[in-house]
Amino acid sequence: MLLLCSACEFRLRPNEDEQDASHIHVERYDRLQSRYLITGDFSALQQMNTEYPIETRTLVEKMLQIGDVSDHNINEKFLRFYQDSTLQTLIGDAESEYANMDDLNEGFRLAFRQLQSWIPGLPIPRIYAQIGALDQSIVVGDRVIGISLDKYMGSKYPLYQRYGYSPEQLSTMGRNFIVPDALSFYLLSLYPMANYDRRSQMEKDLHMGKVMWVVNKATGMKMFNTDFVKMVDRYMHRHHKVTVSELLECDNYSKFK
Image 1 (cartoon, one colour):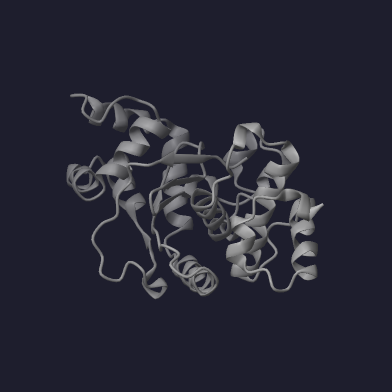
Image 2: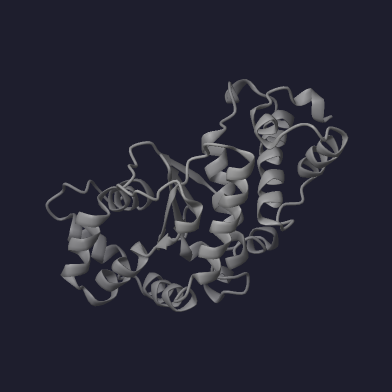
């Protein structure tokens, strides 16, 4: 099951090309993380704190929940947390599996280029990779997407077998779901459902179905195939003049039934 961790204090680094989809690439925060957590390289920790302060705070305080980054002993607690043999194995395996991310970078570029053609002014996010502790798959903040590589090691990854993931969950824990998942949660952050707590489950499912349908179209892949995605697809086939922007902004879910 995917979780969305909202972190509104995320900020963008200055980048003159930040709105050009052709410059999208996954920043390798995970490599600094693994250097510190496996070898104890203090220079890697310094880079994490100086170049990625918000990402480090989000990981330590919100995902791992091991304390405040201002605590005098937080670096030791952070290092000790990952000394667990399972997590050490996970770090090494993730770095090996994702030594090359060219395919993901290209997937993000193509998808965001398509989305920008449909949604003028769509903000292009920064994207970075990290290694969590088998908790959130994707974290989303203000124009920032964080990808937890530990949740995308493939359905047959041995460590997953220990934790009782269902076959349905395992089917979505592979490399091919990184781009679709990241796009889905990013679009949900840009197009949140109004009055969410007062909505019916059908409306909530259709809202997610709209986003998934758009992601399928943007990536050119049918990664999401729920009944609600199919309902949106039938609606869009009947209403050819409805734009993607209008679909995402639509708040009348009776139209899709």
